[in-house]
Amino acid sequence: MAHYFFTGFPGFICTALIKELLRETEEVETVYVLVLPQFAQKANEEIGKIAHDAKRPRDHFTVITGDITQPNLGIAPEYQEELQDKVNYIFHLAAIYDLAVPYDLAYNVNVNGTKNVNDWVVTLKNLKRYIYFSTAYISGTRVGRIYETEFDMGQSFKNHYESTKFEAEKWVRTLFDEVPLTIIRPGIVKGHSETGETIKFDGPYFILNLLDRMRHFPIIPYFGESAAEGNFVPVDYVLKGTIYLAHAEKAVGKTYHLTDPKPYRMRDVYRMMMEAYLHKKPVGTMPLSFARGLLSIPSVRKWLRVEKEALDYLTCQAEYDASIAQQDLAEAGIVCPDFADTLTSMIAFYDAHKNDPDKQLPIK
Image 1 (spheres, helix red, strand yellow):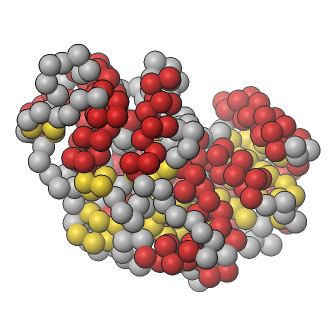
Image 2 (cartoon, rainbow, N blue to C red):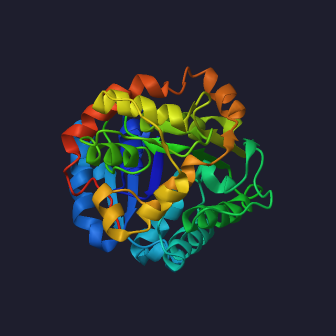
């Protein structure tokens, strides 16, 4: 039996990861989740639902208040000895994921927070694996084929999210020789491939927000003429892949792209989404410079419910090689679903929940 510790709860991916872990293995003895004090009530409610649905005793789950930006993660002393003796697996997911995040906030949480997690991880006496959630987009403005074995290639970055996640992974990589470590770099995570469920409408959902607002326009154009790929991966692929790799000995010391090995071009993604959602096809092309100008106007981007930083991914010329991930996941039969096959459930969930303010990102 094993003891698991998670940061990033009650976030969507962390919550879904715990649920999937409980479905995949009976070897879970205890689940500890670290939450900010203001989320303690919500976290306890969510843990209660998870325990009930998984038919596991509630006392096998412990909500611990703390803050990764504080030394020792802000965890009360009475918990420290228990955690240092028991924790076998730590999944570090806590981060600021907003593309428009201010630098100081992103650096404090993503970089300083990860340094503190690293310092805490090396004190754990029975650690079997440290799983760190990075992102494929630490590649920044690089173009061409990006390999899982590559890291610092002198790249610059499109936003503070990317730059601070790069700095955070740099610190995590210093532990390769100290602890059993696996780094996960997902693509842009979307909802469940079968149910469409997601907690926030960001990433590809910005396209749906745009299309929803423009649905009555006589003509809806493409935006830009880039041949960029859209690397969107359903959350269930990321979860299954992560859980398998977290327990596979061959994954120790490796970095994995949990990206789509056969992504569509962004123009094709945009067209497929428009056809599936509005039953229309794009007509003509709006220059990306004009679109950027429009989204520079706060009232326009708030009405469209689209962050202007999202346009950068329409021209991102990176191609993410996932050969190592594909090879190591093959024996478990874990493969990334085709984006086209997930559209029906994705759009149905979006259409049912598009007016839920809790699912829409606040656009500034």
